[in-house]
Length: 140
Ligand code: ZN
Image (cartoon, rainbow, N blue to C red):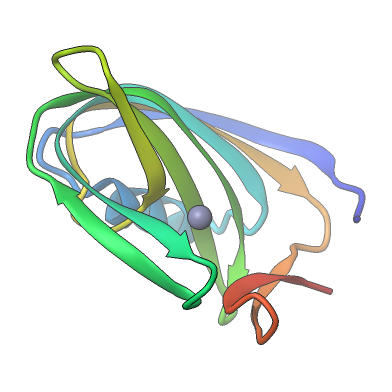
């Protein structure tokens, strides 16, 4: 565990048609946000989600080509390969009010998206590949 102090907070939105993971990646790189927390709500026209199969150590991916609410998007920002990297998870609500969720992947397309980023000041955590889990996790 490492100590951070609260830094600058950002509020904003992504335009309709933007890929959420691409959009957030571009914003944190442009603003050099190396550590932080992100949260957001809104709606998507489609989503691509990942579920990590712990036995096989691979992400199983699925595209949901449907209009949904973003009930909750949450994530963190750290460094991966020396670049600011967002790790994002989200829960979506379907027209029948059932929910799906998972690890957010490229090809999740904004209908409307409002977010807040809380940047943190301090030595950023770095993601490195971990043989035991098969994931890129925080290492000091
Ligand atoms: Zn994840």
